[in-house]
Length: 158
Image (cartoon, rainbow, N blue to C red):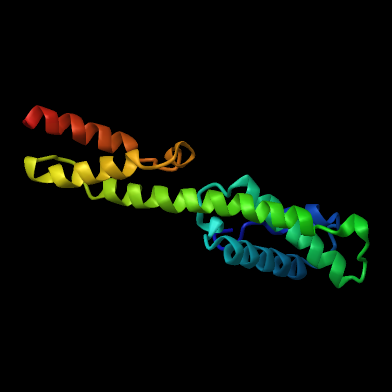
């Protein structure tokens, strides 16, 4: 599923179709939905280790909209426009958080395992960037402990 937000089984469940429904068609819906999420958020949630729940919801609504509209089944019960618009806004915020956190993650990744005094600019840059993140961004910096350890090592070296 590395290139898709939804699996074929998730699409099957979202559309409430039988097991004998064409898997190729379900895969097509999964691809369309993943491309839609990526285009609207400018972030590829499909590459995350765990796909964000809002990305799954957005992809699910998009699949339903495409399926029902394609089947000529449009009615007010199948109008997902408001839900899709709302989720796009929410998911764009998540994408922005992930992008900001990735910058900090990359700065921390530049800090070597064995710290020397010459690594101080890297450590200071990573700390400065980390401190500028919003609270909701912090959870996406998975290597924060590396920064803390590097700061402690730097204090010992001084």
